[in-house]
Length: 53
Length: 146
Image (cartoon, rainbow over all chains, first blue to last red; front, side, top):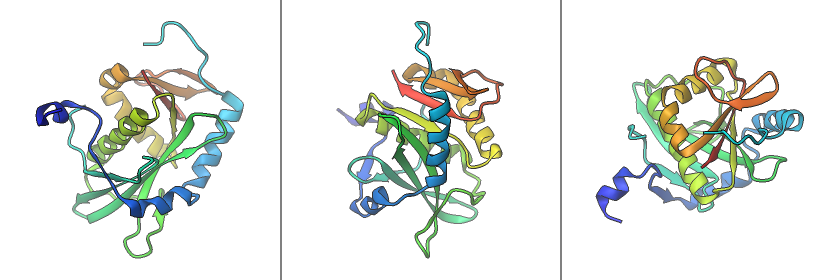
């Protein structure tokens, strides 16, 4: 892939940083995760319809 | 979406990203995290400011660094990176306050046509998911890569 193709992609170039590994195990934003779980318990996923665009 | 974005760092599983917002308030590190939920392949997206001194992450501070469009574009870039790696995943997001949820809704609405080229986009209204539409107030958002 050349530079022009890279620049036109929507997926960003990401630099891997091992120092961020520690945040993976930390319970960050736990209140939002709890809220998400509560919503999802009540609502679930979108119902499948054929005409989603 | 060819909007200006901040450079991104991440750990190798692409569940945690970091970037630095730059503006009148100086440099503010931001952390984006994709967390597993109780539903398989469904992840909660959240992001907040990283305290330069303590390293603590806070999603309720209002940094007002004059770059909200660029911050949102950078967060959207992480959604592309994450769903590239986990193509079957759903990504759930909501704001820590109603005002923030509104800000995210405005951001999605602004680029809805482009986002919908790559994602199915849903909004939560009255305890039901519906295809996202502009000018509708939603409590939360859900996207899946096409």
